[in-house]
Amino acid sequence: MAQFENPVLPGSHPDPSVCRAGSDYYLVTSTFEYFPGLPIHHSRDLVHWRLLGHVLDRPSQLPLRGVRASGGLYAPTIRHHDGVFYVVCTLVDGLEKSGNFVVTAEDPAGAWSEPRWLPEADGFDPSLFFDDDGRAWWTATREVPGGRPGQTEVYLREFDPEKLELIGDEHVLWSGTSHDSVWLEAPHLYKVDERYLLLCAEGGTDFEHSVVVAAADSVTGPYRGSLLNPVLTHRHLGRDHPIAATGHADLVRTQHGQWFAVLLATRPYGGYVYNLGRETFLVPVTWEAGGPVFSPGTGRVEPAYDVPGLPAHPWPETGPTDDFDSFDPAWMFLRTPDEVFWSVTDRPGHLRLRVRPESIAEPVTPSAVLRRQQHQSFHASCDLDFTPAGPTEAAGLVLLQNDDHHVRLLLGAGREVALVRRAAGREDVLARTRVAQGVVRLCFEATGQEHRALVASGAEDWQPLGDPFDGRMLSTQAAGGFTGVHIGLYATSDGAPSTSWADFGSFTYRGLKD
Image 1 (cartoon, helix red, strand yellow):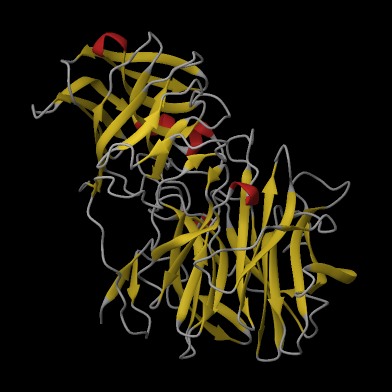
Image 2 (image 1 turned 45 degrees about the horizontal axis):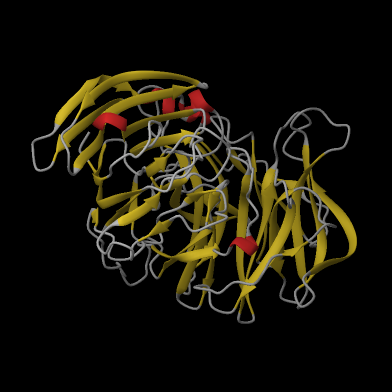
């Protein structure tokens, strides 16, 4: 039988949530400080996914100005009911807005509504459940007032899907598998065989992550944790296992009655470090004694499974090179742009970035467009036509974990290309070279955690710039936070005024064999 490979969404696609509408499946993931927010992917076989768009693609929907790295949008949930799609989510540490909200659409491709903010909704990681009696319910996680660090509880309130507001009394459903459990979160409710199942994550988002369940005869409880908890975890497999930190699951039933779960996990490499962030995996689920069995037969997330019993539906694949005939929706920005600083029409066949004072080392919106790193070994390169007009102007490639952990490969004044590493806020110039006038080609390549920079003038062969450098400084373990590495095209005047622009003729990204 044909098999599919995990992860089904490689690169930084954490906190997946999925729903089905007829024979179509829709999936959203967290995006934190990146704009547009909450990519929505579409599938017809649960294996092949295409980027349909973003739930929050208008500045009015997503106030991210000044949001810290790994702040912003946490843990969305998507649901479909009576012809309407609902997404609920939490905006964390926003300077203009923070808290929980709901948006709706009749077509998941958009346009989605303006957010309906819910100041009455405590906590984070919200979810919606539509019961078969016509009532709808909101669940979320909150820290226990006066509790120990990491002590959380899941609560429930009724939700009015027409007024988009919480109503009625509040019910605390569960506080975890033991008296000392931490970070019970990501609650999702389901009704299976006339019983209510509460599916949660527990243990934090790293090595101790897990999936746990509780069940009740009534939607308001009382809920009792399963004796089989955790129903999924990899923490007992050790830090050398190729898949780790499994958790934050959401269940979906196919139109043919099969069950699957999407969940996040990581793929450490070069030791227990990972640069790709938390990725989206798919596992089969069966039911025994009223509870879910994840990955039956092994009880762990496998790198490959038999394909679901659905007609295969691959989408047309795009090539590795973006020639900027249009602006690909896979490109993202840091935080919400206040102005348009990019164009693919000013010079057809090029991405033009305005050179602006903002720096990628600050919690601002620099002139940068970024895409996820999706392979442990990769090639990323660009063609750049740029003439700096001032001593601080520069443009080129960046490997970005956050504002304090990244590597820049930029063409600057005097036709100097500099390789600069920023780690924990400290900057080191790793290598420099000068290039001839005209188009310069810039490249990062990685073989596992060994990274190197390459430079070429025009059509000349690639030449290494400096020695290989260790990519572990770009990992979550070094930088903290919740995101993976993003690869970007970037232009800056580093605080000085500028009227310049940088033209990128193409960008190529492809995975390499390890």
